[in-house]
Length: 431
Image 1 (cartoon, rainbow, N blue to C red):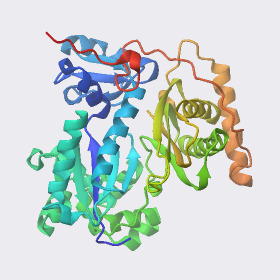
Image 2: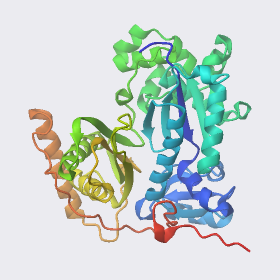
Image 3: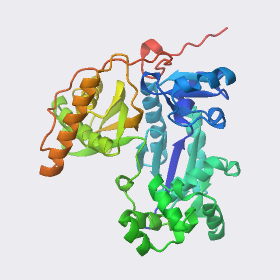
Image 4: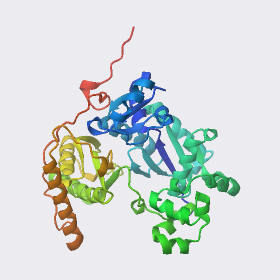
């Protein structure tokens, strides 16, 4: 990939919290958290709550005294709303560039190649993205711009943490001295793809900040950490070479999708594709020892074939309990797919995203949880992974049929699904 490529990383600020605030202005500037499945622990925190020292994943029962003291509002996860708001942000970004790469529910990379002449500067384009997303969706975002995705992530971090950038940081436009000064102030653990253990090993080598890693010898890092670390350094130097699926740290969301070699018109064909995507995503989920709380599924025709009828849709399916069982995840995905499928279209792409990921160690048991069933599920999945690792992918695979709709979990404080349910549309009173 050419070093002249230019990327913008657009990241929604405190995404779940911001989605709730769009539809309830009384929540603005109030300390609030969004809770995980079954209202177990905090999966999103407002800046006011972060300032109180509340960490991600803190169980709600441990926060109740603090909540009473500071008036913290706790809401149940509304993944259907969040998934739809995410789609709306991506739709806005596609108006700016045809090449948008969705990294997670709240982050997208936008390739700016060939578009620079349309704007006075890339920063002006980033500011326009920020303003339009805020105007059309009500969501605040920050934009980081650089010649590689890793640098764009860091530029976004700078835009979020330094008010003088007003939410948009064009790293590419800075002088070399300014770049070095900023990177020297960022801990090495903030680099995309550098996990906690790798960051500790780097510090032991005297590499404590991003600038030090940027200047480190690639051969030495390749020998001690592998080729991915060497590519991270090249990315920090502005050479775009690291693919998304080569990032080793646990991901906040896992996405699996692929365009079809031929157009698909039948639901059973889409079922097969989505089942395969879920299987692949679930393997990655278990590999990083995480559980999934909601499944997002989408499908689309080829928008470049203007002579064909066009259709695209998506849906987010919350799970009653977070799980890593491929069968349960596929059941939710196929149930969602059946809801959004429409006859008479030639589909070009379908995919899934596993959302609301949490560590296995933080599993929240529901009221009707069956420990024996959970142990059996873990054994079946371990056997499935072992067989496929030994004899090849898909040696053991799912049938394309779904498992039925998942049970509804506890969500006592879930807000309405304002944008996707006719029965839950917001009401406006006029005098």
